[in-house]
Amino acid sequence: VGLLLTGGAGFLLYSARRTNERTDHLVSTSMERERLIGLLRLDAALLAQAADDHITAGDDDERKSADEAMEVILHEIQASSNKYTAELPRAEVDTWFRLKETSERLVKTVGVTVKYSNRKEAERARKHLEEVVKPINFQLDELADELARQNATETQKLLHQLQDLRFRATVLGASLVGLAVLLSLLVAFQVSRVLKRQERTIFEQLTEL
Image (tube, rainbow, N blue to C red; front, side, top):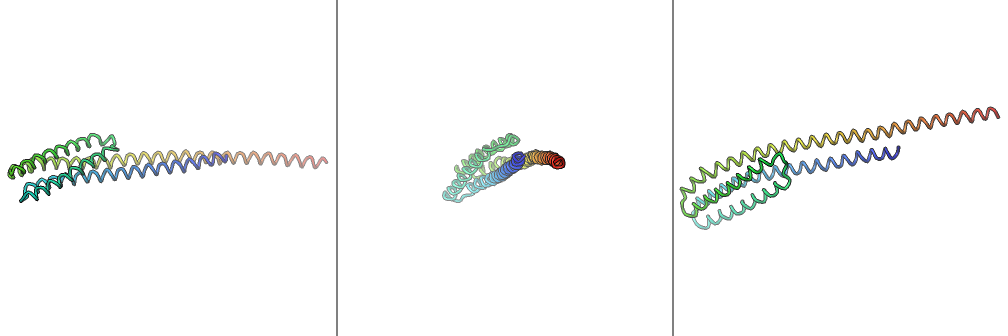
């Protein structure tokens, strides 16, 4: 009975700790994905702005500064992409790859804009920025919104599953403890009967003597 009580209590503690750890990990992972989505959206906007700065640059130093800014942004986009893909939920795979493909198209179109700008074709570069780059940027923003919604939905779904597991584990642990208590009561009742029987036997023997 003691072992059963100890086992039930131990199981409750272990399952609660395990569920809490999984919940913490799930929430922190979801928040990190949310941060990366926001970072990708920001970097996309900054990339378009850097291309615009390149077009409007008054000299080579300003163009070089815009090039350096774009290089940093592109590196950050790649780093964010790699981090996001590390623990990608199945529900988000399709949207994520569409977002990634759109990001790659954005990078290529910005590259074309910069080429026009480097050739001193400012008007052509600006037209390309307005007609090609910015629409892709809007698409990327919409996909990022969709991905953020999916991330929130998937996280809520997994949290509900964890809560369900916690409830089942609690019921099972409580059942074990309840069974142990019931067994202890039965044992106590049985011992009490035996003691009473022995007491009666002893009393009868004393009476005879």
